[in-house]
Image (cartoon, rainbow, N blue to C red; front, side, top):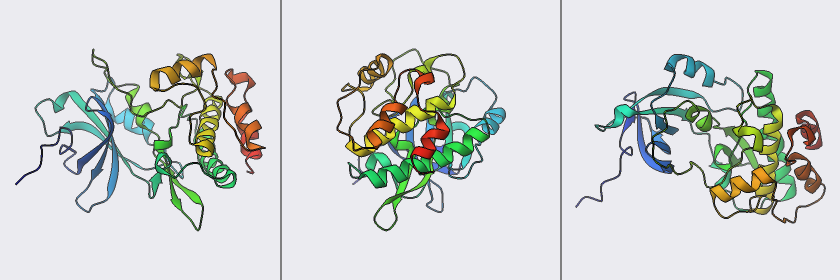
Length: 268
């Protein structure tokens, strides 16, 4: 007896190597999946509409060869369905451990501080290479138990960067992740600055400390509006991290704590 058929692109593959095994979020035109290779290694796959730019320059741009960033493996059309030619897929390594969205919440102040510091150390390397992520979700930050605390194992940060240049179909699409972790200015045409990553770290820290998003809202769209208008949720945050979160979540980039000061305040 066979089980129910799985909806494509589960069962599809990229480059004949990475077979998609489960959906993590979104849907096939704009989705997040887990894949395996023949050896059983685990990878993350982001799918989107056909890319508007040549794939080789995109691969170079998204390589992000920085310590702590999961390795980019491939960008190619998806295979396994008659409509697959309209879908491009990006494959990156899945770091060890768990995405921090799956960690037991809340984390204690010290584990949360150390985890945020480790994230900032990876972001520092990206900033030195001229890259600003302008958004990190707990689903993109991986950690593993290291003797009683959660230690960063890596970032898998390329999903939103990949989708920026993908063709968007003319029907509504669900978000990749349950909640937005983008700074208000991230939607503007100007290139983001490290202040956008400061905002993302502040959001992550608040989420790890409380298990709740730092802004008011019950779904993705209401949270986006709350971020844009600065409607913060009343959270009880431990001192002195409460002041640091407040400084990181200033609506205006100019008023946020500068990235180097954020690193120092976290103990770096």
